[in-house]
Image (tube, rainbow, N blue to C red; front, top):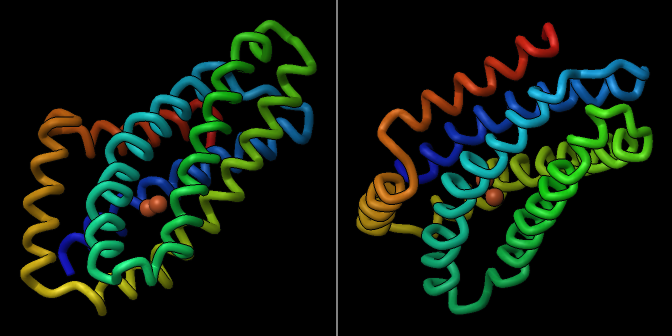
Length: 184
Ligand SMILES: [Fe+2]
Ligand SMILES: [Fe+2]
């Protein structure tokens, strides 16, 4: 199913970003200080790529279509995935709010940064795993080829509306820049 393939490919970039974030978390745990720019790039990626570009496709298009088709039978599963997206947004807002203080040497801000990064990594590792291994497999069973085509048209339309044409490669580059900032 093409639509699922696209989402899985986006997950690969998101997992690379989570690996960078985990390396930064390990540094923070040992009292080292990744540069402020690293976290600014992490926030930009989480907001623009993970949230606007990727979660939008899932929440409004794939989940929407499946919920309609299964008439409420998948509400619990979809509810968890939406909840995790929402928690991710909260963690990213908290990270954003602690970057300046962290850069100024505020220890409470550094603790808050670490706490929210750890939570973000943890929730999205689980989230991506369960989408790839469970939810997307279910979607592939439930949706017809025609529905896949409809989703692909909608994905394309929304991508054009949300981002410019090179957005995927720009986002991938951003993840590469993050790893350079922490010598990973
Ligand atoms: Fe998701
Ligand atoms: Fe996802």
